[in-house]
Structures are given as structure tokens and as C-alpha cells.
Image 1: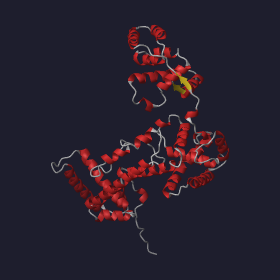
Image 2: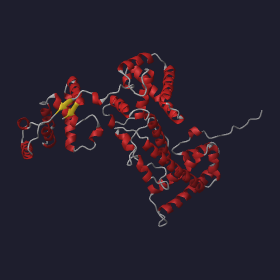
Image 3: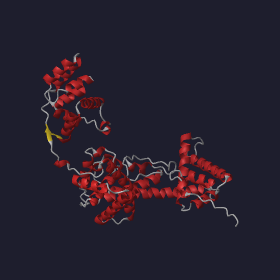
Length: 454
């Protein structure tokens, strides 16, 4: 039987979503769909297109252009062509068009598609604004603001920087958008965020707040994904036969789940999670296939988290018990009246003139009777670290806790806008705490958690 030469076709898995033009050019050449002459012809046409676009960029006034600008325009051109080629279902036919259609024509087709995607993304952004969650999380709110992803629709330049995404996006999706750039990245990010919002809108804002507060009291400042926490909590409620909508799972429920789930292998656990997911669909009346598909793409990550937690006996870190901050016990703290401004100024001058730490400490003990004045002294008196430590050592636990409440040192985000003096107080307070016994540290931190100002 005669040998039949096997036909070479492009493997779509080898193509880059972000750099589609370059990757399909390379794969088409490797597979024999394009030859050296084709590559040279395509390259010359790309250079000709760049020259034309550069002249338009300069409005015909000059032929010279910065290297960085030329590189950006070339990337933009190839990105737009790639968007069109990607729209062709068969990559082999896309390679055929590369060979037979003028690059300038492919660019115009791609540019029209980029513009269409821009308009679609704008509509999705408006949809996301309408189903936006009411949350305290800063990264979520800032990303959805006009200065976050909203600025993209004011700054995007599809003519010369189509490959770029000029936006401030801090909020992390459960399923990150990878291997995309420009308008394709923005459109996909917004599509995913819209679906995440749709799911979370099935739950009361208060219940989500209590869930995230149970995860971490500082959740407003954390780079977390709300959807992942809500979906995980809903799965936990389903597995524990709890009301899914309430997102409320207890410590006893978590112990029950640990005893139940630790016996399962990966396959059985996955089947159990899938069953719980279908139960969620029924309880919440989730019929949107796109949302169901998104949820199911999120499950492997959650299952991995559960498996790790089962091995480490830390399931309570995955299935969170909600906490209502309003119901937490409160320790009320009140500072006495501050001293007169003139008296305070004289005290600061006297402290700065003092040579000995013992004299400074005596002055502060004698004249400072208000916590607010003491805090001001720490900021204004230019004390050395050992003097800070000596002063801290004279304070009661509740006063140290109040200092920590005013100058928290657990989150770097909180320090972004601090003055140099505030950063010094924060650093020396942290150093002082590290010198204390673990038990006393824990006691002070617990006081700080429940401290409220009168």
C-alpha cells in the first residue's frame, strides 16, 4: 500500500491568546502552510503598514518617530490583525488568509472587531455597575470606580495602542484572565466579574459581610475574592445540610464535615462537591448556563483547598464561621481632656532639650494625663526607640491596645498614607510588642479587637 503523506494542521493549543499573530505565523511556518517567501512578504507588508500608521500618528508632518512609539504602533497593528485571525474558527484557514489577503485589509477587519469589542465591553461595564456588590472591600470598590477599570474607556487607544489595557485593576477574580491583552482582557475580566456578582447577589449583603468578617476582620483592606468565599460557604452549608442562603456554618458543622470528608478520596470528594453544587443551583434557582459553567470552573480550586485543609486539620480556614461585629463584646475607651496648646508646646520644647531619657520619662509622667496628649508626644517629641520602649513599658495593657488600634502594624496597606512620624510610632510599637511574652501579646491584641472609642 502506498505511503500517504500525513497532512500538517495547526494545533490550536500551541497558539498564544495574547500574541496570536506571532504564534499563528510561527505555527503555520512549522506546519508548512507558509514558506520563507510568504514570511518575507508578510513582514514587508507589516513594515509598510507601520510606515503608514506612523505617518498618520505624526499627522503627516514628519517621517521620524520615537523607537518606543514605533514599537507600540507595531504591537497594536499585530494585535488588531490577531483579533481578526482569532475570530476565524479554523486556524488553518486563518493561515491561508495571512498568505492570500493583504495585511492592510486584515488590519482593517481586525480594527473593526476591536471597536466592536470595545462597545461590548462598555455595555458589560455598565451591567457590572448595576449588579455591583455593596461591600467594604477596597480593592473591589476601587477597581469598579471611574478611576479603576472605568478609566479604560476614556484612555483606550484602539488606533495606536490596541494591545494595551490602561486601567487600574486590583481586584482578583476567582478565575483569573490569562493569555489575553487589550480589549480582549478587559472584556473577559468584566464578563467574569459580572457572573461573580450575579452569584453573590443571591445572598444578603449582611450575610456576606458577616462571612468575610469571620474570615478576617481586616477584609476591607485585603486582596480577596468575594465570590470564592461565598461559593465555598454555600458549598459548606449544602454539605452540612444548612440553609444555603444564610451562609451560616458553625464550628460543630465543621467538625462534622471533617469527620465525613476525610474518608473520601479525590474522586469521591469531587462527586460530593458536584452534588452539593447542583443542590445550590436548585436552592438559588440558578439556570444561567454561563454562570453554572463559571462556578464549575471554580470547583477544582476549592476542592484543592478542602483537601489540603483535611490533611492539616484546618478545615475551619476553608469553611468560615460568620461573625457579626455588632454582637462582639466591646471595651469602651475614653481619653481625658487634652492639655492647653501653649502648655503642650512648652512641654515639647522641654522634652527636646532634655539630654537624659530618665528626665524625659519623668516629665511625661508628671505632665501628661491624657491618652491623646501621650499619642501626640510620641509623634512630636523626637524620642529615640529606647525611649519609646521605656514609655510603652509604663502603660497598661488597655493603653497599649489603644495605641495599636490607633497605629495598627499588621497591614502594609494601612501605612501607605502615613507620615514619617506615624510610621516611626508604628514600627517602635511593633518592636515593643515583639519583646512581650506570647500570652501578653495575645491578651493585648484581643483587647484591641474589642476596643471602641467613647
